Length: 299
Image (tube, rainbow, N blue to C red):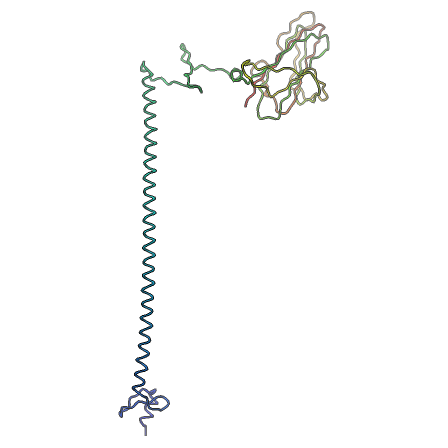
């Protein structure tokens, strides 16, 4: 026969018997009042924990909202500053462009006003701001060649000399270039009253010799040549011959004329950091010889 206790045990101690009693799983009688108080206290505790959790969440969300608000204010202020700076920069740029446009307009107006004949000619100015002259007959622009330009800029130099030599006697003239980025545009000429031979050597090795004064074609310029020249130096290594010529017939006072590279197409651009020797040899007695070196120096 199944008892109330058995039914309580089989139902986990939660089966309410008809007598109004409840039994625990161990068969003992459950104290309903005590159980209800325990459950109530537990529910109160849980409610307190939930309330505390909700309050903390509310506080955290309020802090997050405050941080977002502050960040938004900062971003708003930064964007406001950027907008203000951009507006100021745009105003400055606008004023600059306006000034440039006004200057261009003024210059154009001045140009138009200066062309009283209505031809709208273009006026070219030099570095000093002066008008460059144009030939009145051909309307061509006046120009000068490179050599003249170097002379006018005080960058053109020369040496010259004369001598009387008998048969097989020599004149040796050296010109030395430094290790420089500048380039010498070199030409020379030799005259003789009788037959002379001329040879130009490159990469010679010399010593001693008499210093030859170098003159600037612009006598008002204080520029000094980067070259050095010697007369009749001691030649230990002749170097490589790059030019040779032989002019004139035998006899007394036979003018041979020009020997050398005076023509533009025979100009020599001297190699940097090298020594050149021009050897002039008389092939008749009492030969009167004159020589001239000319060169310009590029920057």
